[in-house]
Amino acid sequence: TTLISGSATSTGSFGNLIVNGEGVSRVGIGTNATAFQLHILNASGDNRAVKIQNNVATSYSEVQFEAARNYRIGTGGSSAATGFANNFYLYDGTAAAGRFFVNSSGNVGIGNPLTLSADAKLTVDGDISGSSTSTGSFGRVEATTITAPTLAGDTIIDGNLRTIGDITAQNFIVSSSVTSITYQFLSGSTLFG
Image (cartoon, rainbow, N blue to C red; front, top):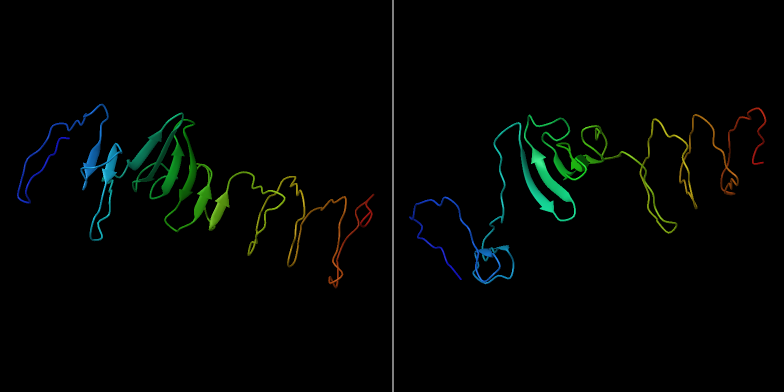
């Protein structure tokens, strides 16, 4: 084990710090007993462990993870690429595509921030699916364009269902508590046929 230490008034610099001991490189900050390649220990006080800062407005502050694929999490400077500037994001470096982001308004986008604008609390670019046992509720679901939606299993609507366009169903079950239904026949259609 090699220790590097100094007093509160020590000054100096290193060209490069290379740690290679006992066949495995290990760095301990706040500890000299670690089984990890990098271990940061805060033993007292409210000290935040890691800060990564980039003061270049057109650049990014990122942490990169790499195994079979390359992923990065980070935030873009104020003049970084559109969709990344001032956003927190998850970037798929292998596919060269953004996957997830949170913008400065706290809105969440699932999809590529280059092409997706998160104007609502949650914006998803692509399909959303659940299993036959999925449960949950939404306050309001609003869509301007839905192309050929498919609902598999039970779909429960607690409130009003308003459509501009057709609803085609093989079986359409209406609760006995429904007091009225407004409908319009189309040529060749039958009601609940």
